[in-house]
Image (tube, rainbow, N blue to C red; front, side, top):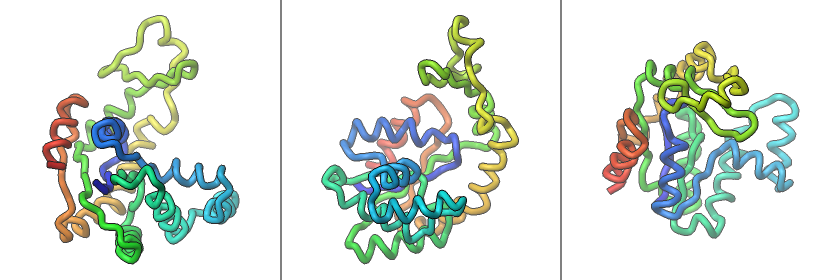
Length: 208
């Protein structure tokens, strides 16, 4: 099964992706992780991407798409993959679709996680990171034990202003790609509100 995961930041895509990896045995390909891995490995596209990043510039879409095509050609993608973090705009969606069609790769489903903005903000603002264990807590949904509370970190990315900025980008640039995939009959909507188990059950139903 070849799928693209989309949804606002903080919608729970990462949590559900980890479960889908276990259920379907296909890799979760985060565009950010993929870029960093290619740079570290020193591949031709990684070297090109690194040059742009060191100059403080965005990596061109054609370079990212080239990396995606290389990555999904790997043996662990034989049964499918989950692409997360790309595309984020209509031009990227169109370019990725054209490149995959040329490569003979067909996307089976685009899974959209829908969560209200207010809940996204609440989830983010309440998040706290443990710098020693790496564990992430939430002051409301997953409170930390008293003995670790004082050392927890509230990241700048998890403050309300930063979350709202990411949401504005999502609504202005990423949300418009949904009609593109809906028109191809690929879009499946999943209510992302609820416990991870509840959302997982909806994901399995949507994929069925």
